[in-house]
Each structure stands twice: as structure tokens, then as C-alpha cells.
Length: 365
Image 1 (tube, rainbow, N blue to C red):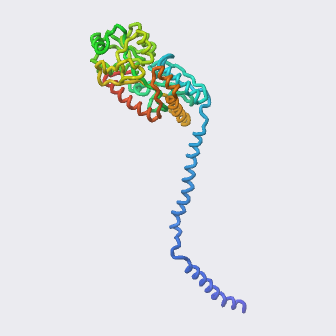
Image 2: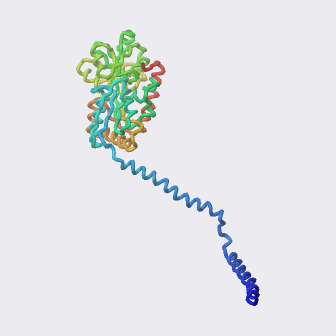
Image 3: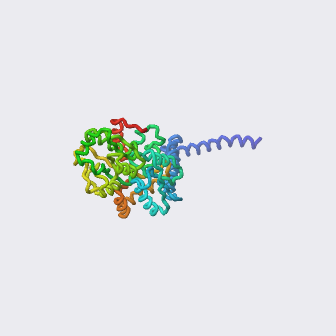
């Protein structure tokens, strides 16, 4: 058919024209055009960028959330492991007054004496309400676990370290009829185990301090008698049940000034807290330097917002002229400081007291 033969003649010419166009288009492409597989890393990188930004966004949001989290939302509780009127109790009440003003919330001090403060410390470690804190002493953080591996809490794991609150030297006191200075330690050696000494419990600074003092002052052999708190230790001293004790100046000085007790010496260098008391070094005791401190802690579960705010507020209270004077009047030097500084202090204290415990073979009963 004519039309069909015309079609058959036209197809080869059309096909040749199309092939020519394709060849021209391919020749027009740049020789450096990226190959499909070379483009893959660039695509992956561009896809990764949104993911990195997306992962950073939740972290930034979380930080803002912590900063914006309202805390406290109800009254706070500070647990103290010693009786009312004890030096830790007095420090806790001063701190509570300062925190109640700065946090605009009531802050209650609750006394749970016993086990050298470890009963209260354990309650703090197990608290889950985000509003329970603890005012603890040296021993609760440094020596308690060394003395009793079965202790129900671990200070390094179960506490949020917030701030060192205050510290103080200790005063070695005795009855007014006992000798002074180096003669006191001579009398203690001659008395052997007829003399006793009191402390606020096994592992306390008053206990371990005198155990260290024994080896630095002629190896006297006074027997340890533990009490619930320093008020009870003073009562025992006044009654003659114990012949010596290391107690904070806030409790020692009133009794000394009243002539009811005598100061043998101070466990540190000279201190403004007890300006009239000579250091034990001046009574011939060498290589002895020890103080007591109280610190603010919370349970490890305490929220980041609470931890950050409490650390700041506790340090601010320590810097406040009004609060500094109140601490000083109660026999404390206000300290403050960061959580890291408290952790360092606890680590150093643990090393010192751990040595005493090992040398003397001291164990919790």
C-alpha cells in the first residue's frame, strides 16, 4: 500500500534524527558532573545536619525546663540526727531560717537522734518527696561506712552533696580540778582505764579525735563512752562520769567561763571562736589538727533544680552578715561553698579518719 511504503521509508530517517539529538545532549553535559554514587555522602551529610540540630534542641529545652521548674512547691524538712540544743541542731535552725526567707517556704527542722546521726542520714538517703534534706556531721559522710560496711546507706552514692555549712575547732575539756597543759596528759596516762571520755557516738569527730590524740599525746588509755549528743556529754562531764571530751566551742565556752569545766586545748590553731583557749600544740601535742563540720545534703534523687538552688542559697546564707553573726554566736564559722568543694572535703576527711579507724581497729558495735 502506498501509505505503508511511505511510512516504512520515513521511520529510519526519524530514528536517525532522534539518535542525533540524544548524542548532542550527552555531549553538552559538563565532564565534571557528579556521579550518582559520589553524591551520596553529601546527601547523608545534609540529612545528618537536621538530626544533630534536632538532638541539640531537647537538651536546650531540658535545661530551660530545669531552670523554669518551680521549686520548692511545699514546706521543706531538714533532718538532724542529734537532739534539740546540740550544735548540729542549732546550725540547722539558723540555716532553716535563712532558707525559709530566700525560698519563701517554711523550713522545718526534725530531730531524729541516734546511731551517731546515721538514723536521720538514712531517712534522708531514702527520701523521695524532693523536699527532705539533711544537716549532717563529718562522721555521717566520711567514717560511717568505714566503721560499718553494712550501713543501710552509702554516702558517696546515696547523697546529693549540696554545701558545706559551717565548721569549728573542738575544745578538749575536763573538770576544773584536773591538771592543765602537758600535766593533764601525764595524769591521763597514769590513770589508765580509770578515766573515761565522752563523745556523740562511735565514729564521731569527738570519738576519732581522741583516739588520734591518744597516739599523739603519750598513749593514754581512757575508755570511750558514747552519748546521743553533746548536751549529754556535758552532763556526764559535770557529773564526773567522764574525765574528758572534745566538744565544740559553742557548748564548751559557757561551761568554761562559768568555772564548771576547764579547757585543756584547742584541736586546731588559734580560733576567733575560742580566742582565750590555747591550741593543744602549746601543751606539747604535735601533729594534731582536727575540726568538725556540718553540711547540707539531700537524697541522690533530689531534682537538679532543687540541688542547684540549694547550693546557691546555702552559700548566700553563709555570706550574709546577719547569718554569719548568728553562726558565730552559736560557735560556728560559716563556710558555704560548692558541691564539688564539699565532695573534696569529704574525700580528705575520709582518708584522715580512715587511717585512724584502721590503726585503732575501731568498728561500729
